[in-house]
Structure formats: structure tokens, C-alpha cells
Image 1 (cartoon, helix red, strand yellow):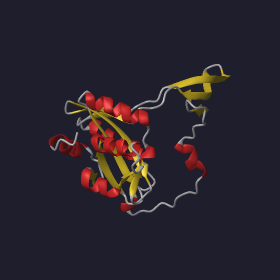
Image 2 (cartoon, one colour):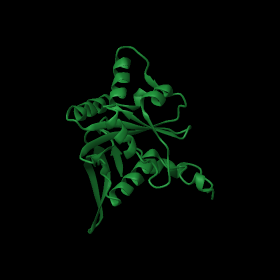
Image 3 (cartoon, one colour):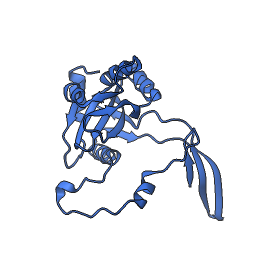
Image 4 (cartoon, one colour):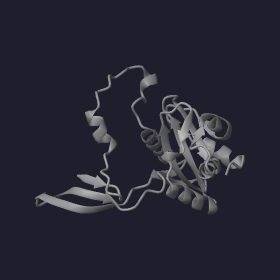
Length: 208
């Protein structure tokens, strides 16, 4: 099936990319058990743990797709051959925890020193700003993949960096800002990315 973005660019899912990559040798050491997983995989597993433990209800948002070409190789089955994303996505995840509306984006960077703001889109900033105005909790979960470090970046800090960039400032958020103005999450076993305790600190310390 062919899927395209609203601008017509061909969408290539990560599964297709993995098919052409060289196979990774399996390592039995448990410390390597999460290597190869994307941040999205880790958050999805964490959210599933929260759900079955009745701690929170947070899901990845589905992206609306416009189907433009369907074939019927069999009478009982239809095969989608071409489709487009109808609208640009807002953020990756939303849901409810402890009476709070949660809305966040998950981002990864291979940089060891900063997070490029080009990874965030203007419509996502606008969406998170709207969420904050309604007293929801908006933030980023950022993974510095080469450092294996995870941070919750409150939207207020992201907005400051974004406004600074718009005014001609730097186009990234230095790692030292994450270390001083965000909350680091230490990866665990189950859940892998336990971010709810960090949200509690954000609310208590009024990071919003």
C-alpha cells in the first residue's frame, strides 16, 4: 500500500526501513534487551503497563488517512494500494491521569549535546499551547539515543526556546538546559519509561 503525506511526499514506515537493514546479532545480556527499540515502542509498552495497572489511560493518537485507491483481488477482501495522511498530526499521545488531561510528543535525537528544534513543528507548538490554556499538561519526552538518557521537557521550557529561535536565537535546546530545567527519567524494566512520577513533580513544582 502506498501512503503519502499531505504534501504528496511518500511515507516510508519504519518497518520497511528495517527490512533492508543488516540483521542485528542477538545478545543474551539483559542489559541489551531494549536496544533496537524506538522511543515510541518504549512509550507504547509503558502506556500498556499503566493501562493494565489502572494507573492512567494514555494512547497514541491515530492519524486520519484518506484512501484513494483500492483493489479487490478477491471478492471477500479489499487491498488498499494508495492513501494519504489527510491532516498534519498534532502530538503523538494523549489521555488522562489522576484527573489531568495529558498531551505530549515523543522525540529522539542522536546528538550528544543538544536537541534540534527542527524536530518540532509550528502546528505542534500551537496545539500544546492550546492544551496549556485549558489547564492540560503538555510536554515532550526526549531521548538522547546515543547517551541513553530520557527527559521530560515541560512545554513552558520548550516555548521559551521556540520563541528565542523565532527571535533569531539558537535553533536547538542544549543538553545543559535539559539537565537544569527538565526532569530526567531513568529507564527501568517494567515500565520501561516510567514518566508519571515526573509529571507529579512538574505539577508540584509548577513547571507548567
